[in-house]
Structures are given as structure tokens and as C-alpha cells.
Length: 494
Image (tube, rainbow, N blue to C red; front, side, top):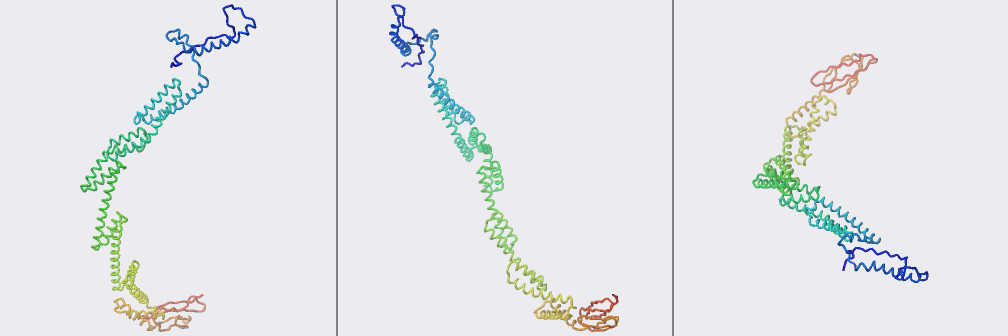
């Protein structure tokens, strides 16, 4: 079938439908009656001729495209109908909108270096867009829109591949790092950075790949040092490897394993020293060793039990030492000191020997304190209550079997003091025969110049009064070994 577009349009001939057709018989017009009779048939024939020229004649006439005459006579193309024009405009607009999305995706993908990871699919999508361009130029907007949409879909699929492409490359890089393949890891992380230059994971992975050879060399050296028994050197090398690549799991695991081995070794050594010290009776050293073990392993029940054993030994020794010191103080009749030591022991632990010693020492300390207080002021024995208490102290002291030298001296001294306190001593009192004298605890003596009176050793108070004069008060002591003279007189007028 011949395509209508292969023919040039032929313009129809102009026909004057307002004039009657001229005949061979002459040009004189007909009458009005005659004209009305021929007008309708003439009009019909004219319309049929026009239709033939427009619709039938072009099918049988081949256009002449060989010479300038054809160019001069080519008719203007027939314009599209308004509806058709509207359809074409809509298709053109849709094509342009889709094309804008294609261009946007193209720019985005080129920013992601799509040619490095999706060249084939990318070029296929651009080829579809180019086909759309060719159709667009031919005003075939519908087919052009189909091509643009196909290109847009192809580019969208490439965009959707980006995350998967990045994730796959990252996984490949991490696997290469774990396998010690620096070249493969470098290639993988560089591939990621070509797509996403700011990808922190890939940047760090690339840094790890760059130091990987040095790190593996350090790890190998550390392995050799550990096998040779140089654990300190191995520790230093593992730490250096981890410092260069903190994310290197091999270095981290081997370092942790060696640190644990060193910890176990040091712990076992501390425990061994502790138990050896316990067996040798050196609880201080044992306690230090078990404390060191607990610093290494704070949750070790074995170390805690060892420390408790060392503390028990220390406590027992501490108790034994204080018991011995307390008994020594008792033997020297230093009862107050012994009492303090027994109390210290009982404050820490209930020990039978300490309880008995405490009772014994308290009683002797109280007796010793009473004796010493009485002997320190024998003049108080002149007071009846004090004398009675002193006699009771002397009786208690005499009831103790095997008294020590101190108690023996105290008993004798108290007995002598009691005896002396019972013998009156002559005392001479002087006055002015005008002052009335009263001796407290003895009685009124009246006025006198000189008076002799027998008094037991002790402390006395004499009071003198005289009318018109200030009272006087005289305190004096009476001792068993000397004569005492006392003057009582009021001499200060009021």
C-alpha cells in the first residue's frame, strides 16, 4: 500500500459556483425562467467535480519530484485538526516531563560514578532516551514518551541498585580485611567511595587496608615472641598492632588472650606465695599475697578464703601476744595496763582467758587504786568513813593469796597508817584570851591564851569570833610524827 505521505498535496481548482456554465450554442444569458431551471443541476455537478478533484484525483496522479517545476508547484501541507493538535501537545508535554526526570536521574547517577559499576545498563538506558529523542523530532510524541519512560525506569533501577552495590562492596571489603587481603579490601572500599565519597565506613575500611600489611607483620612477630616465652615482647607487639588498627579483631583477640594468660599466671603465683607463707607462719606476707591475687581477680573465692585464713592467723597471733603482755603486767602488778589489754582482746573476739583475766585484773586494779588513794593521803584516815573504808581495803588485801611485792608493801603501809591514825597527838593552841575558839568536829574551847589538846592525826578547822572584830578561820593538819602549834585570834576590827 502506498503511504499518503509520499505524495505532495494538490490544491483543488477554484470553481465559481455563482456563475452558470457556458455552452457551445452561445453566451447569451437565459431568461429568469430558464436560469432557475438549470441552477440546481449545475450546482450539483460543480460539487461532484470538486469532490473528484480532492478525493479521487490524487490517488492516480504521481507527483513529479525531479525538477524545479515540481518544487514550485508543491502545495502547502494540510493542517492537523484541533483535536489532533491537542493530543499531540499533551503527548509532547508528557514526554518533556518524563524527559526531565530522565535528565535528573542521569545527573544523579553520574555523580555516583555509575559508569564504574553499571555501565552496560546505564548505556542501555541512554540508548532508549536517544531513541525517544529521534521520535520526538519526528513529532511522534507518543512513541517518544514510551522510550523516555523506559529510559526513566532503567535509570530508576540503577538508582535502586546503589544501596545494594554499596552494601555488597562494604561486605566484600570487610571480608577481605578479615582474610588479610589488603589489595582486595582497598579495591572494594575505593569502589564504595566512588559511589559515596562521604561514606565513613568505607573511609575507615580503606585506612585499615592501608595499614593491614604492617599490622599483620606485628601480629606475626607477637606470635613468635609468645611461642618463645617472651610474653612481655608479645604483649607490646599486639598492643602496637591494635593501636594501628583498633578494629582488627585478630590483634584484639590475641591481645586479650595473652593478657588473660598473664593474669592467670600472676594470679597463680600470688596464690602460691600466699599459701606458702601461711604454712610458714608468716600471716602478714600471706595476707599481702592474697590481696595481690584479689586485685587480679576480685571475684576469686579461693583468694578470699586464703586472705581470711591469713587474717585468722594474724588475729590469733595478735590475741596471743596481748594475752602474754597482759599476764606479764599482772605478774608485775600493773593491773590497770593488764585490764586494758584484756578489754582490747574482748572487743575483737570472745576469748575465755581474756574474760577471766579481765575479771581478775579489774578486781585487783580497783583494790590497787583504792590502796594507792588511801596511802596517798593518810590524814583522811581521821575521818571515820574513810577509816572504815581503809580497814575494808586492808581486809581485802590480806585475803589475796600469794600477793606480789607491791600489794605486800601496800598492806603494810595501810596497816601502819591505820594504827598511826588511832593514836592522839598533843597539839598546842594559842589565842589572845579574848577570842572565842571553836574546834570543828571536836567542840567549843572558849577563850584562852594557850591550851594543849590531844588530837588524832588528820585535818582540822578552828574558828575564832570576837565582838567588834572580823571572824577568823584556821585550817591545820595534825601528823603523828610531830608536835603542832596553832594560833587563833581575831585582830581585825570591823
